[in-house]
Amino acid sequence: MKKISIGSWAYAIGPYENNPIPWEEVITKLKALGFDGVELGGFGIHPNPDNMPEKEQRDECKKQLADVGLQWSGLAANLWGEKLINTDDTSDYKKEFSKNLQFCVDLGIPGIRVDTVQPPTIFDEVSYEDAKKRVVDTWTDCAKEAADKGVYVTWEFEPGFAFNKPSDILRIVDEVNNDNFGIMFDTCHAHMVAAIGARQPGEKETLPGGALELAQKLRGKINHLHLIDSDGTLHHDETSSHPPFGDGHLNFDELCPELNKSGVPHDWWTIDLCFWPDAWNLTERCKKSIDELNAKYGG
Image 1: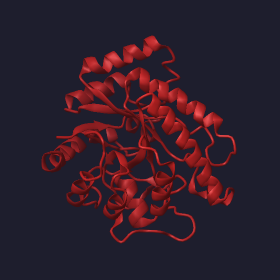
Image 2 (image 1 turned 180 degrees about the vertical axis):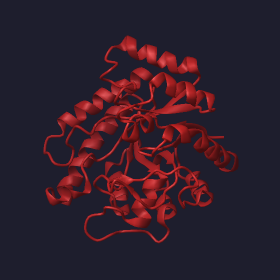
Image 3 (image 1 turned 90 degrees about the vertical axis):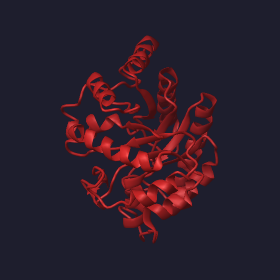
Image 4 (image 1 turned 90 degrees about the horizontal axis):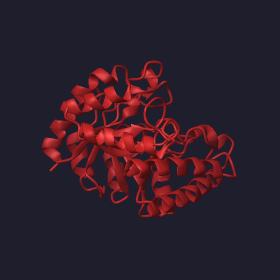
């Protein structure tokens, strides 16, 4: 069976930005609902490198989670204040990555999430080749540094950030070409990228088989999974909406068997309710839905 976690950012940003759910309340409820772990959004009031700068604080946070009976499935690092594509010097990005990487090491978090930071409109300012080189070179360095510390790097592609076409995703993961770097396959982002072509600059590029075909093309390159539905819409015309299971039209009876062939080197399935209204109260429903999928496909 798969281990089930959920991203804590759903309770800290978007509808919860002005009234985030306290960390202790988050992990207590997740345990009560039968979750195995939590995927940490390392920003806001939840644990992060800036509000827990001391090793003692991090040790206590690690112990707190273990005492509740949960594990970490990953870290969504706060890298959005840095420039990655629209600068020749990505040293500040890499410095912030290193800070978050050490946070992973101190808390025992196995994987760290990255994205391309800038929106797809960045190609109005920067050429495709220059942008790709900056991303590939930077992530190559990050993957090597993380490998030395026993943490893997996973790239979450999505409509709201540059390189959001299927061929972009394949091209960049191949050019980074590091066993410690892979793709985070978020099912709703995959649908919006591969079936809808949302926010793609220039000519749209979609796949006849949508998210399923994209998963097939990425087999062996995926190292992290987010499972949630998609209704084919964007949140505020920026990034994918993340509706609860059953409120969209993804076919998980097709997707789950393929994702079991993807080569992910661990057993985590992570629910992502990012930006979804009332995510806190819908968590129990989503847990029941993913438990049903786990019973059918998690073995």
